[in-house]
Picture 1 (cartoon, rainbow, N blue to C red):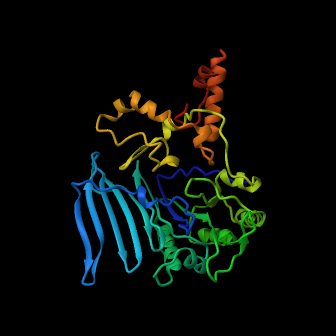
Picture 2 (cartoon, rainbow, N blue to C red):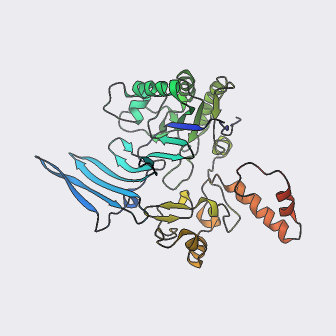
Picture 3 (cartoon, helix red, strand yellow):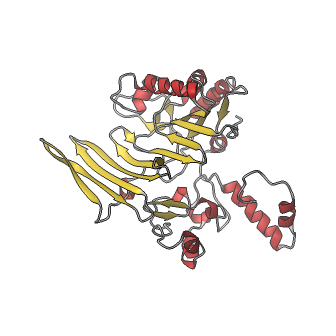
Length: 377
């Protein structure tokens, strides 16, 4: 299989509508309840109740950096909602960034909205290539929910001023109850997957006016890729061939480099031989609950660099405190999962090694034409 990199769209506005799955017992990216934001004692506190009694609690507060925070915990007749939210406003008072995390009875509640430099991006877990699979992996109370989602995307495609994308997460989950499996796991157990709908989802994406269709593999709660069995690889190869026949100058098929690894490797781990991660200097993640070395380690207290600093950020960035905290992450022991920045780190370390041997490559790189917008160069 040949997997394409994400194309560059020259238009100013890019809108990404993600049809990607929130799962069952193994969840791709779902934030654990214990990692959701914790309201301070000064937060506004609300009780959620009805004539039937108390159902939960809700809090609202402003973080030290001005981010507007929310946390809600509710149990409605056995249906559990555990959510947090964070949002910031732009100079015009309109939302510039909104993040929702947590879980609802339907699964992962993750949603994001961001604007930057005239670009808006929104992503919400919806899922699937057909209504039947949509209802299976994304239970909902909407009438013809899947058709409604695609209908709204088609309306957006007709008036958009940017690129519209359809993102598809390849689901693997253990079969439950009377559910029938349609593939096998690497250990031979029956599983349910939506991989057989990749081609149909790509066809629908093109039909409704999307500019690209992207499919990608699942990761577990520790960010490790979910390995493919031989029959799942065969399904993906077949579906990829269907997708490629749909490609035109105006419609792209995209798959990440991790798909290459899963197409040939039984072990999804990616061992690292370097002790430091240069990419962390550009991937540091600032959240209302603290600062983390990169998105892969978000929520890990042992990797947390500290709370959001009250001092000017540039002073904190240059501080010994931050540098010591960054040094606690050793890719050789902490990052055996697949990392999209691994190849970048290998190249940066190689450049450093030859530079230390007296070969002046850096000055040659500075004089050459560098990749556009590449922060490393």
